Length: 236
Ligand code: ADP
Ligand code: NI
Image (cartoon, helix red, strand yellow):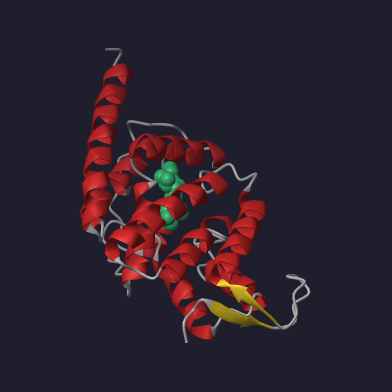
């Protein structure tokens, strides 16, 4: 069956009973839901991050001829609950996304695909290989990672550091390339280290050609930013 029409059962939350929801309507309701959940977030995982990832993911999906419905739902829901803010619970994101999509009576195949993407999407450490299992997953991961690069990526890194009360930089604490997700999760270093532990590694890990090209540019911008940062740090 085409995904254009999905049967929706009785649902208190949607106020619709035994009617059909168009995919577009499911996307719109998901947008409103995510917006309401993440509108006053201050760690760089706020609604506007989701909005940028969503728009980028749609463009990449068009280029890659991917399933727009899956891509949009996964982009919108990918940060609905992050382990970083739930005591390291890695399953919380998929659980919350599943609960939402089940309420809308979205079919199980779509829910599992979206949840799989949410489960796999995160960066888990320099030496931890994370392979996305579908084209749609690769696209959403690329869109998410592009938003961690360039001018916005820099702003988000310092926003996150501030949110966590971390030092901006401390020359005596060197970066570490983590070999396990557990090690990466426990790390509480200053923000400049995050560039070396994650952000500067991302351009080599893009999945799609279009994202690789954008990542190259943003990477160069971050390198020149860091060069200038260290010059100013030394009073030059
Ligand atoms: P992912 O989408 O791979 O899970 P994260 O949630 O780790 O990514 O990162 C999202 C944003 O938060 C990024 O912009 C990233 O720079 C920032 N961030 C995450 N961890 C840190 C950190 N330890 N220091 C500074 N910024 C961080
Ligand atoms: Ni994200």
